[in-house]
Length: 175
Image (cartoon, rainbow, N blue to C red; front, side, top):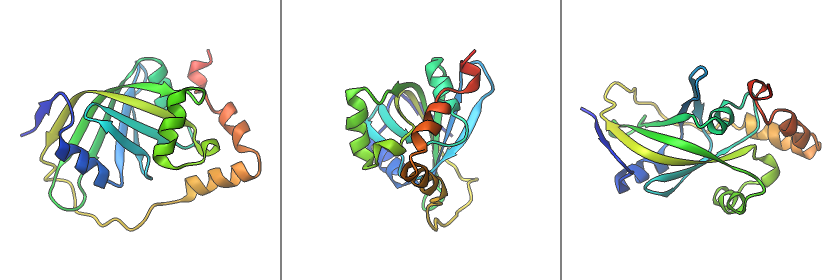
């Protein structure tokens, strides 16, 4: 049986830090978006706040849902070791590149600013932990670096800034 509580416990934070993959679901009155996320792209700031760094790529529904005060659920599950599923129910705030917090958060990831599309600050209002006994045991091999390598190549060719500007706001927000 699952249990729900208001903020992360120390064991939850340790669990999040071990995961190589998580899922981000969001909705703001449109279709529910569900996207797997990899890389070293999430940081726990405290028991009720996370920061997520996003690279440029296809779509930007996380941005759409954040700007429209949508709902977010982050799901972490164990593929190795003891079975566990951890769901974080959140609200998101976009941390703009002009914000002082953007620079502070960027330092947490040790990433070049030009490669980052967005940084999101998630405020957790509920945490749910459940068994995860049906999740398969799988072995992590390595990160798939093609997205980051593409961003680096675009940046080196001075094309990434233009791409990010063109793809910054999802088309359904431009109406």
